[in-house]
Length: 408
Image: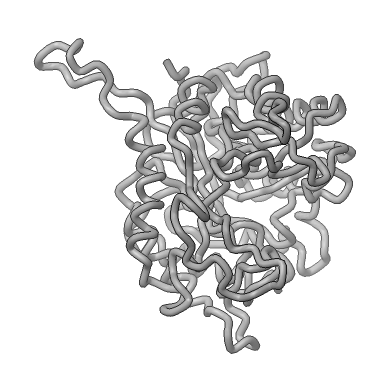
């Protein structure tokens, strides 16, 4: 069966009257990939790193605020392959168990602890205890389809599967990694497998081969979880149909998932070069996503936009509203996560500020000098208002979504 998704879409209404196609909405949790940058590109910098000092996956209080107060049901949690699979053993099925334990704790907090029993003393003796709805978590290897040197990400490291590079991990090793990781989360229906963050500057045929190896290994491991697969060229929606024979649109629909539970992973920023590095928003989201949306429609596929963002300017507010409305009004889009929250950003900004220290989307964060952060000036007044009133809070994550309901 070719990579495809059912066109079934629930018909409940969202906020402000747009049609209900968004099942999953939330924020990217970025801090698990921190602590390895080297100004001199020194390989091995920050590896393995100290958990809680050099990196950390989530802040429990931040997850609480986003999930309970802002009613989001999705968190994308970044980690580094080089920490999960140390350089001493290489990419594959052998994990650093201590590191994996910290990562699993974070994923379990999002997908299990937040759904722990509430007020059991108030339930009848023979009734099951009330439970809080469960959020979903995307596993995000934040490696740009590279492994062995994250010291100058996103450009350092060997492209996985590059047979001309003797230091590169192989396609088979990438599959083995995903088979092992999938086997450990196969019993958790709220876990979504994001195969790779932003592949770039590699042959699209090799990208497809790597993704297929991962999908095959995941399904062989018995995991039925939702998978999201990225494109080439930083998985940019605006560039999806660009590049001639190397365009993502020429390749990604060839991915085969026997479980028919794979969606597309798209990133789309609104600044001049689509990098998310600039304050000014100048790229109309409807125009930027038109090509990939037509491609999704042609191949009957569904998509998540797992990175997007903007600054606190008037133009960015308008465009962010436009982007969120565009996704809600086009049934090809079933989920999104804004970039980015995370406990280690401090006053630094994850995007869209020309390197100015305006803080992040992390609840309680502050800009340099103690002023309001992007959480205060972008998330609360703009993005949070577009979180659908009803999302999928129960049942397995899938391309077909499920029952939409409000979180109490």
